[in-house]
Length: 367
Image (cartoon, rainbow, N blue to C red; front, side, top):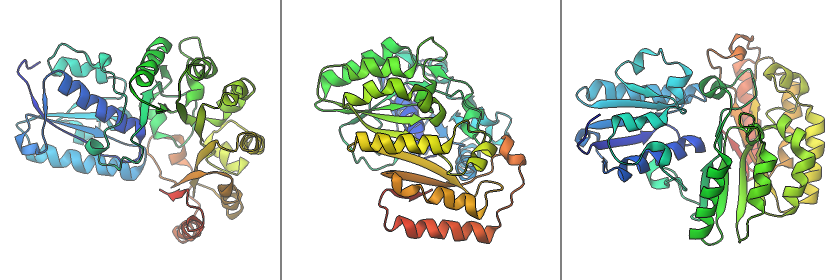
């Protein structure tokens, strides 16, 4: 460890993953709290910290390009590669010049940067949009990271390979952070960040409903967003969740349907019946018309037929906000071994159809 203050150039390689952006902000907060300086020019830095992403092939390639840039031009500096890329594949040659920490190892930053406040004691409540290079559209929106990892085993998922099973934040800590936000901000919107809220508590003897019951029972004028709820866990907990929804505090929920085809869901190793899920979501929307229901889908998954694709596309208008991802083959995941039977020309036709649909569905984004 170096005792003198460091000058740190910090950046993230993603603009899409809220958890990544949250971690980037928290790393900044940790450094500044302990007397280190964040600099805008890497040439001035003593240390370069890169928050990486590996959810899609394009994200990994972007991360690798940036890592190569700094390893070539800044050999005299301390280099750090944080995030999902080193967790996904720690043996990558590009990582050799770097100190690497995966998302569950960030508390080890205290070994490298001196200061009285350990990383785990940093209480970040809001993503710094200027720091991470995104537009701040909701100045009164705050975030709490409640868990990482999940209980699923989806065949395509690089995040699961990077983060593994669920690690839940202590409920008392979440409630304390929640109360701090309520005490210091008027009418906050508080987003609960995790890969799957439905997995919350599986490692600590509680569950998501118990947490949400306590959060929605707080006094005050506030709103909650859930990012994200895996469908099989959602359906399992749905009867108990009704009490929580009736309190009117949850204004947005993301439930990643991923495909409208049961056959494709089986190939994805997603363990739920899509017809049951959609029927329940339609009822939820009818009962709570002000609730924003967001989802994501993957198209052009290996073996996805024309009929499978249209089983998905027919569901898009049901949701207020939809993110559609063009399938990205990730080496090291089970789906990478599936035959890719969707010709490139057909992939482009499908994406073109979705782009046309996006012109009349303002909440639809093609990723």
